[in-house]
Amino acid sequence: MSEAVRAWPSPTSAEGSEKPLPSGSGGVTKPPLLLIGQGSHNDNGSAEFGRFIHRLRCRLDQTAADVSGGYIAKARPRLSDSVASLVARGHHRMVAQPMSLTGGTWLGTDIPSAMARERERHPMLTCDYGRPLGSDPRILALLAERLADAAAEVASLRLVPAAGPLDEEPEHIEIGETAVVLVGDGSTSPETNADVHRVSRLFWETHAHEYMTVETAFVSLTPPGVPGGIERCRRLGAKRVIVVPYLLFAGGLLDRVWAQAMAYAAGHSNLDVRCADVIGDCEGLADVVIERYEEALSGIAW
Image 1: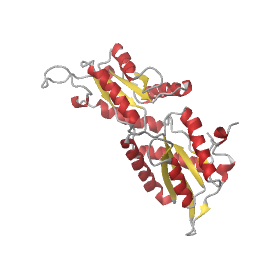
Image 2: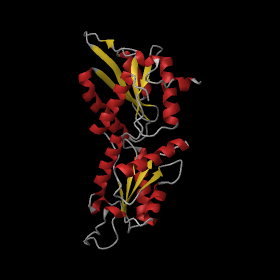
Image 3: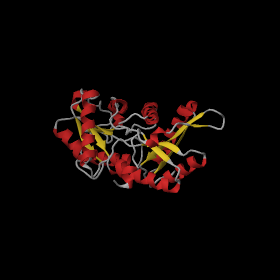
Image 4: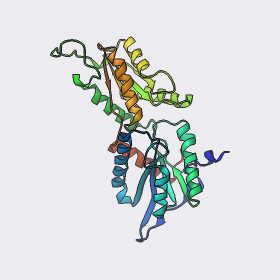
């Protein structure tokens, strides 16, 4: 087995059996929570990631748990800097939580490899891993909230204004005439792409069954792209299409989703095309991440 694979231990491994260390004040300090992001060159994504880390710090402050976060590449703070800072503060065991909704190479190889490099720099370092966020029912509920916001009967939410006089009353569109396109980031892994299709189905059955359909699209690497997903909805007879990014935070991927959706909408002014927001920094997401953290500490297998 390769070092990269060994670097992704189960929460029930020997690394997960270490007890919280006594703090200098005589209390108990839990291992810190380390959020690991994919990173992009977009400052908006880094800012929102930072706000979410601050939210978790406030939430976990009463439990004496430190929170930090970093990116493997492209953005700051870098993962190596965040780990070094935690080690300098006396932490040698931590819980790493991948901040991604999909798996693939990034989850299965890139993160374990990055943490293996950190253990080379800090030989005393041990690490448990939080369960992937994935299709948690609360994640689906947050997607439903973003969908509802985008579906509001407000003409200005259209990416491209409708053709015709500006003072003309906008056509009322029923929810059954509205289709949804759930957009994942896309991967070279068929299993990862299939999981996004699975989430689309779950989302339709649990939160969006009143809509015409929930189709699946991807930002890159695999078809269909965002225009292809919208076009399929148009051919099915949809009068409105709402693009729902299956992404945690704003950033370069969201910009590409919006750009692709706007480019399609510009050529189809009679179709009401809208784009929902990402899940973003919110209490609901914090609930899921904190649960993953507590699971890793208690050794729950997954």
